[in-house]
Length: 99
Image 1 (cartoon, rainbow, N blue to C red):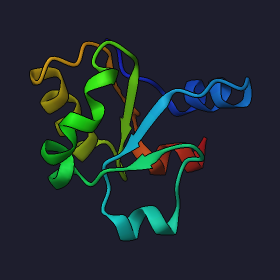
Image 2: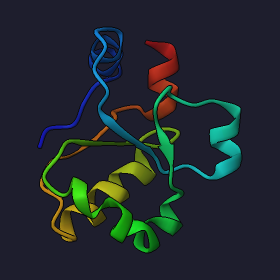
Image 3: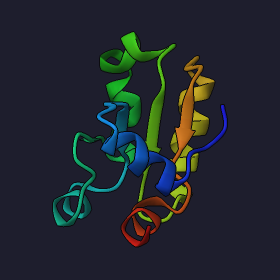
């Protein structure tokens, strides 16, 4: 699945859509700034949370971090685990805040 841009995500949220958004930054980063409706699962904790995410295997999941690096790793990991519709937020939280 193609990645998603910050303006595209903002437009969808403003239109009332509620995609599954996972923030893979550390908890302290999430406490400083977050995208409304996102859930915080730090990248290192992702393997431990797979059971909780199982029902989302075929649904769209948008992952983000500060700039896009950690979320790219999260996307690769989830895809390897059989998730079929994982999208990385290009530019991460920095791009989201600037758009």
